[in-house]
Length: 115
Length: 109
Image (cartoon, rainbow over all chains, first blue to last red; front, side, top):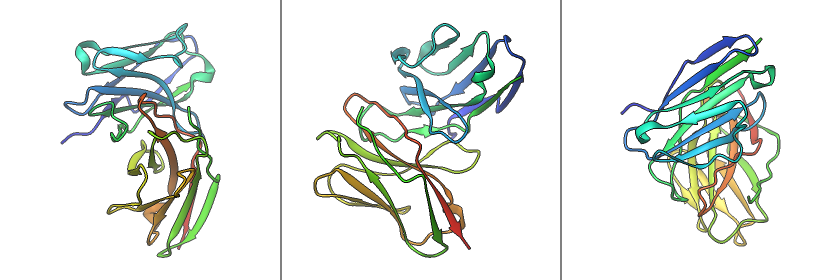
């Protein structure tokens, strides 16, 4: 079975340019997470979806970040415009349900470099 | 959110057991204790989780203190492939899942 798929793996852009990351979760997983991970730090939650509904987006910088999960499957995370401080790895994860016992499955991440 | 505290780094010799501690003094009765690890250039992967009783699986063992204010992840025989950052996370009924900075484990050949 395929795991969580993210693309692109690497992206280099100049500041003020837009960028988008795509995530395909494991089939049947209704909970999807986007995390940001800075170098040497643990992942920080940006947004969590239950099916197509964003149930926790309190940490998402809404002035420049947006996300969507159409039809409750794939998800896209967008940054517009990108700033130098957005350079990080963006991780997508999915889980079968929202139970406290549930296991999260992570993709390999999308590494963004803003010049 | 209930917070966890872990040492920044630990070292272990290859083929020896490793005990990775985690303090979570503000844990609530419904919080599960999860451990994940992250190998270089990869996303985190699940290791083990538990609520009150000690747990064993093919990767590791989880020992939970009687008062649940601390736990220890046990790798029975460390290998070079176990070198990673290990995260201790509390997951509660609100489906919160927040990582700390974790413990960076170095395995010495």
